Image (cartoon, rainbow, N blue to C red):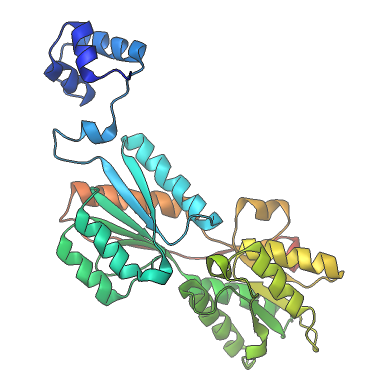
Length: 330
């Protein structure tokens, strides 16, 4: 049977209140007593739950991470950053998947109404400004990641500039027929990267050809998968008019696209997006998106907001960095 705070107090010959003060880092306990209690707790295999530690201060010592889907490399990197910050702070994390087919705002609002946590980290949910304004009435700490708002602290990435940077690089190399290999065309990141792509084409007086905006048929995870990338590249390689280069809107899609090129015995210059760890090992030119760092920053903003509700809203937008490797250099 798991040991409790009562067992530790009995073994140490002290009150439950004294044990509680030790686990809550109070300075009112003698050092010899503190050491004795911690030694007994360790021998018993007892470790206080963060939630229990927060009871005395009426804090839950918990935050909730709300995401559209977790089976995605982008969210894995975000989560790694979040967990590293929370581990240092001894705060528990609850992850909740939001079903995009069932009304994102309604689900988010229901969760926040229940106030299960001290704060909420909303990742890539892309609520409207009107919806975010409605959430303010609940007066709970909220931090946005991969999103931007004047209502809450946010950490985002300049997706339009990323699309522009990648496309302009290919144009500067003399390529004109440049395919945009995308995920679901309606997704917010895809729309923003498309804007950058169009801006670069416009600067070179190249008209947009809708036939060169291509995605695969599999729309799991909004099409940001290896399978979708493979399907899209298969379509590209079957076009009547050969293309010069490809801007692919995610590294994981590029993995599938490169496999399709290999299967068809073709090579087309390609720049991707994200700079996942695998990118370096397969020589993938890509736009660097600091996902781990963004996870850390958004989590730190949220913790600061919990401790300082009246602080000025922080809006951090990361700018793109193009990393050139062999996939774009032939």
